[in-house]
Length: 202
View 1 (spheres, rainbow, N blue to C red):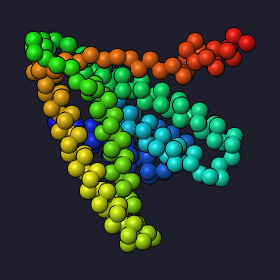
View 2 (cartoon, one colour):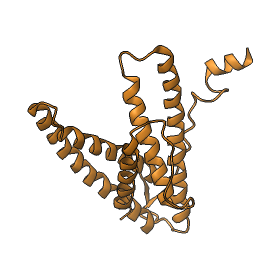
View 3 (cartoon, helix red, strand yellow):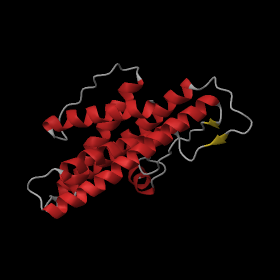
View 4 (cartoon, rainbow, N blue to C red):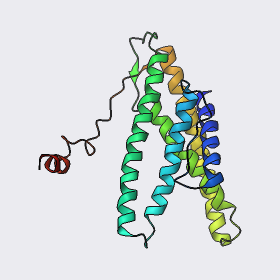
């Protein structure tokens, strides 16, 4: 099933990142460039780096200039994340383009790729909660709380994976249809962000 494949690739990306555990390390994709696996691996790598950006920027002693630089990296990462989601949705649009939707077909609240985006973030939550649940330098209370949270995350993984597989099956059978909207983010656009517009016209 697709969600199981995706989660496996997300885990590979997370494990590979944590060998060096460095947001500035070089990136190498082990999958063929024209494959869905390539997109999934790249997607999770972006999420994993950004996860650690978010940790770093919350350091109360971070230098203001460093924080500003990092904030801009996070903004760029968010754009990359959105782009990858749209590439993944393009894959599904192409895959199911010949499917004839039934007259009773309905649209889902989110596209397949945005659900997969949630699964990628969930893979990171599972990985890091497992780390917390097995810490030897933490209090027993902390470990027990993290173990309980991990149980919930694993249940969420099962539910989300099931929902993604069902959505894809429904699209393939014509019970649901895909309709993808570009995100149209405004804050990075020189014409749509009034601050950037004013700066460039000045």
